[in-house]
Amino acid sequence: MEQPMTQTQLELLCIRAADAVPCRTIKHTAAVTLTKPRPHKRIWAVLRRGTAVCLSAVLLTATPKPSAILPDLVLQNEIAGFPVSFSAADLPTISLADRLTEEIKTPPQSSNPPNENTGAPEVPPVQLDTGIDLPANSRNSGSLLARLFDRAASESVRTLTIAPTSSYGYDTCGAVFVFNGSGKTLDLAALFSKPLAISPVSAEPKVLIYHTHACEAYTPGELDSYTTDASDRCTDPVYSVVRVGSEMAAMLRSYGIGVIHDTTLYDEAAYTGAYGRSLESVQRILAKYPSIEVVIDVHRDALNQPDAQKYKLLTEVDGTECAQMMLVMGTDAAAGDHPQWEENLKLALRLQQRLLARSATLMRPIKLTRSSYNQFTAPGAMILEVGANGNALSEAILAGQAFAEELARLLLAIT
Image 1 (cartoon, rainbow, N blue to C red):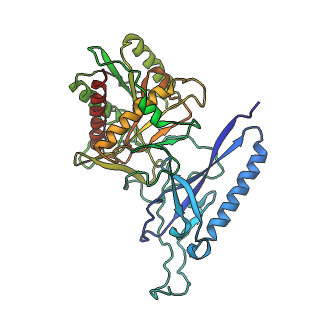
Image 2 (image 1 turned 30 degrees about the horizontal axis):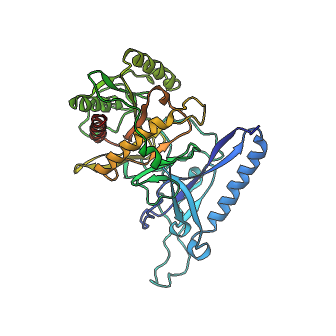
Image 3 (image 1 turned 180 degrees about the vertical axis):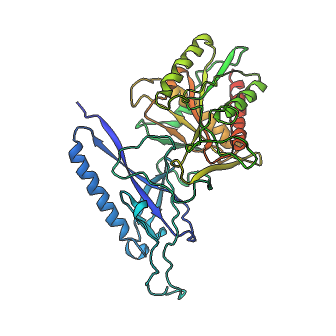
């Protein structure tokens, strides 16, 4: 019998001078994912520490002039959950450590000889520019390395647009990119060719919108009167991700699509257990309205720890700035509870295609996961991440409206 496998991440912190020319493919913390058998924990602990030491040694020897030492070293990693690659020559300093942010000091003035081409001395990194992909309200992973924090003020917000620069690490079909973390083999072209298991629009409700993490909110602007906590959450549905769901529902109804919008705050009393509580409600609603075939769990993403540098995911739609979005799709890989996951993915692929045709960076690549996230409830179930905690509510609303409009057009085209 095969041993159950799990995944563990070793986190790399990339440091570069603030005034350095940024590498096009790496600005944030990387992750090296290793697979291990569960029972041999002590052996794996030794292996992990050995791997960390080796990686640290290799990467640290690449400074201060990595191009002269390891010109061909290319690191494969991920940014905000999506794989990228970069050359060690692009980074002045790379290091790996357990509590690195507590240990880093402003480096002394470099004593390196003048640059042969310009005669100017090498400039050492004098200011950290770091980031990490970690939801603000997630639990610690228990990995070898401690979670890292950006030293920038928590009040500051940095703009980011996530878009793949190559097909490396993705399953692709045309403009549609899927970051496949499920372990499943995908044939996207075949999925595109198969009909959707969704019936034509009728007078009955067709779409359910709900929010497992309904308290997720955005960054208030100067003229906003609401406040959020350290994890950018609030219980006022007018200013949280629930408001995005309301605007999406209104757009769908304007196209004649029947919508049920569940505004229950499943995570208000406790974050833990929210998926179980929302599942019970979704099942009750579907029992009452069996005509519903599209079930959307609307969230907002977060790319930072609480009280750390925030990021807004920004793009344009119809000439106006709005938040980027991401579809998170489940499978049965983790628990075997979602055998029809390909039906969900078929709808997600078509939606992604339509939205990217409207704006090339409106959607981040689809993220396919091992867990089901309760998407076994309907043939058109999905999670939609609208923006990040650094985005303004108005940017998220515009993005949600664009998503709902394309969904309405797709549903109306089904005959």
